Image 1: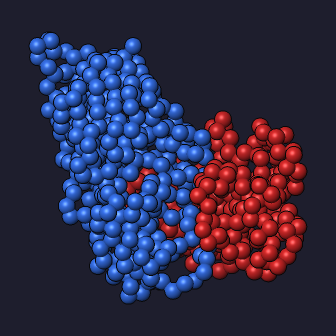
Image 2 (image 1 turned 180 degrees about the vertical axis):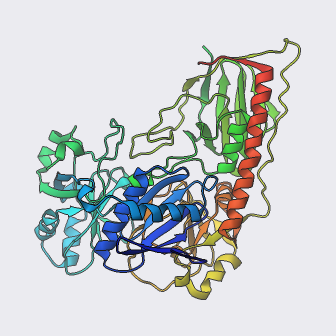
Image 3 (image 1 turned 90 degrees about the vertical axis):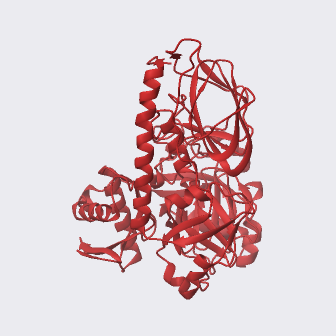
Length: 247
Length: 322
């Protein structure tokens, strides 16, 4: 373990980690370099381990693609203590065989039309037919990489020849359930919110169920697949929540 | 039944220090001026995480259906009880039937109203803070009522309870906001110093998700889309050369912009009270200094709470339940 002005670094389980101050109430913990897939698996495993072992003062550990944000209460712990806790967890996480199981979901989607207002224009920009865009999305059976704004599950893996550009003027309001793409990523909104991403479709399924004690069901690592439905079938799913869509 | 009624809501929501569930993709959505909110709760003997009211601007009018102990902090406003001016940043006794009005704001933006014993509210994932994802909307509506603890003044009718407890008010001048270095500061090279040498003007487009300021912002070479990463409350984003956004308590947990600096907790409190058109300067500091300042503030507020509970205990008989 090395500690200096730049933060703290240590090696555990084949990963070299660094922890640096990120404001007065947070720490960023990240693998130093290496394969992005290994980094993604490692950050989620460490964040899960930190969240599952409640430590006084540590509020939450949020992993995304290649880093973890650990938020803490500075009246209880300081950066050095939080980094030490992260190091401890990185040496103690359960072996791969005991990993939390991931869920698989199959989500019904209406593509294009009113529910996917950007589909046609996006297809023109990409130089393909709208059906090609839909087919590319339907082929995705990818893990949630992380949770974005308002719990939206974020995925990568779109395989168009070019990256999807964002709207030059973001929309003030995009409806919950919208399937959006930008760059090589896609996401599903859990609540109405503004966005500059391209809306290609929408699911009638509610991803968040406020009636549950833990209303946000989906986790990084869960697999989402999609199936196309007709707009006329929208109302059939009026009371469907994500837990009804387990594959 | 002892209660408190909302006569006119203004633009007011019920909230607390915020939800700590960023790992579920949920924003904090807690109070924007943490110090003012903590003082308000402490002045009425509440715990720091008790739900309280946050008003944007003037207009809130409450009617007491019983004896109420409350405190109003935050923006410098004209607090009126039954039409007569009353001091803010102090413990206040309101009698049954009296109207409490948050009047004209002289300086600042957000007003906090804490009520002794707080009000019943639905907590989800550890907080009552509103969240559209959870379907939790705590915006006050006219006619809304909360049952309160029954309080009876111990004093005889001709001697009013003596509530002498105040907190130091917000410091307004100068409007400097402290920042600590962000993980991507090197991307901005020598332009980083612009952040601390320029004057920035508050935009009317600011909200709880991000406070927007116009001025000569540091620049980084364009690198296309960065991968999203989780960002702390206070993270500074620079989406265009003259726009600085300071992510605040309503911020979405992830962002794709490089982060040159992070505003301190004290700085977030100040930004919550800067009005559109007012200007602000950023000042560099260290995490250690920022933390010390925060701990000093907490110690000061903690002392208030103890004293307030003693005073309330001496002057009022409190029922255990609503």
